[in-house]
Image (cartoon, rainbow, N blue to C red; front, side, top):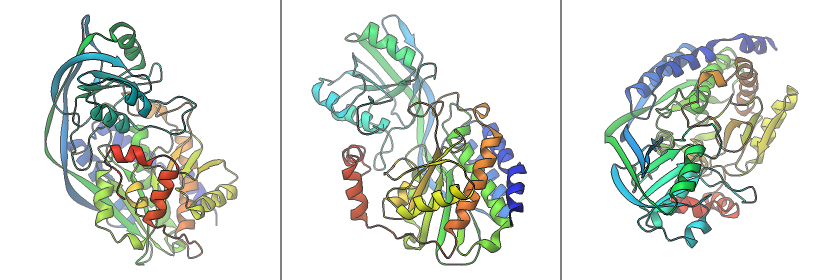
Length: 433
């Protein structure tokens, strides 16, 4: 039967929910807007599954105040990075280029304001996360951290600092555009500049959204996303589209519930953007041995071709390719490790998991994590095409004919070390082994 394909391609359920999410505007973790979006997602999942619930948990709250980079000629445009501590410091400005680990080793940064770019050179063998560069600066004794977008015309970038054990960062942190960063580096390298951040910090509450479909099996397939977004934009790509896709899949799978041999649990997490807090809470309170696999949607719809990171679980890559071949639709499968979205809180313990995103032009997040992460960047056609592929993949993963073995934590650790990811995770406090 293929009638379901037409139903999904003509459905406006998921896209309408995406519009609902972006119209909330501020979905920052722990905010009233995040709660509003979670409640709307709960209601949308309940309409498909018959019931849905919220599971609350406590988090470190952070509400944006003012931020400034103060030069001898005046203030420059910037935004504070979430969970930056409050502070007002001054020091010699140092443009450290890409901010590679070797750059920090070779520089005298004690008491200085250090700026690094958001990318790495083409010859470098791995991506360096913002938090890795930040904690290299902390370790080197820097007084403040400035994060420069590497793409022209794409505004100052945001993104959190802090660790699980110490949710607030240790030094003030700001983001600037490529253009502002170029001016800072050209005019003020070696001069004294000031950095100030003010924010309201305190206790806050976030929540995960849960719903289930299919038979009452002990084993579950998790289909996941995150509801929260950075407060500076609509969060359409990151990750309104992922949560809207979970809602679309729930409605599509409700019509195909008889085809599910394994329970499917939909979980839309809170507080992803401030350290994967919602997924860490869920993973710590779930029998991970009963999780068949995690299908985590974060970055879908931003480009037309889906990209699947499979973390060396070959059966996951095979399943994605099987579905893509069935529809004669191109996809990209990357077998390597990717420890930067909600799947990771399961994968790091050996649970098979995908990070499903999409291919876009250029390096980095593009419009993501900037003021321009807005609905107009996405296409309904892409959403509907991907919904068909992901519905079919979820049915494949939930079938009796599919099997994937869990990995040992030692195997996961070895893969991270082989891909040169261990050092960065250790400096950011994310190494659990």
